[in-house]
Image 1: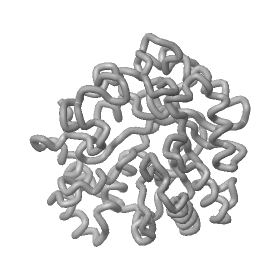
Image 2: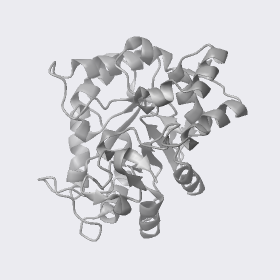
Image 3: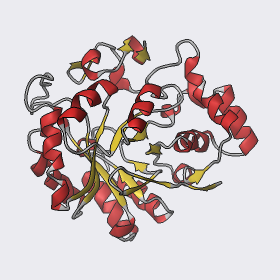
Length: 314
């Protein structure tokens, strides 16, 4: 076992391949966020250098407190946060809100969280309405010369919407953060982003510990052979392919275990990459795909994700 590597983004900035994910649910816990503060502080103290949060996680303040409590110099850290869909029409102001929340002078990576623009009352604008994601991205490009962000990217973008975005903009996104694990390996998107020099970052990289993944014979065989955890194998499977990962855990022992990178053989990688091919296995594990018809106000055709009821990919 070794430590995780870093990847170089298309603008020359280095991003640690492993980050601590900070999605804890949309409402901060009743304790006022102490749990997320302690999680971030512990992760940084034991060697993590990448923190991934978002405005609409509702915990940027607590994440910032964990960063400060860790005592790790800001120059050693890579901090990612995300522009919420309700703020697509106020990019400059939204960044400043996140900077203030986090208590930081700059963000290493600022992502457009979703392609949809939402109004303050939660209504989704349609792709032909303004501001659309092209308008929003052009405003995000203006952030780079200010020094308040080092890199910009997107999240939850399909090849279809990247095909719409890229011809209309000046700066290619450095990152596209999407759900990715052996049940949803994002093969088409992975190859697309590789051609465009866009790094993929995987959220839910452990498949939310669903038994269909965690108890799969191929995975268990590798963990037995390597003498490691299923999480270590799943994270390393992605990083071996050149994908960054941002797993979340509030358990100190799991945070520590996830810090170990496993060198996997080609047969190991292939076995894990075959898991999604079994009937009914190629699917999302995220609850927001439950009805298979709409996702945050857009159809799956508009999003470019071939989804049907239950999160199963066509």
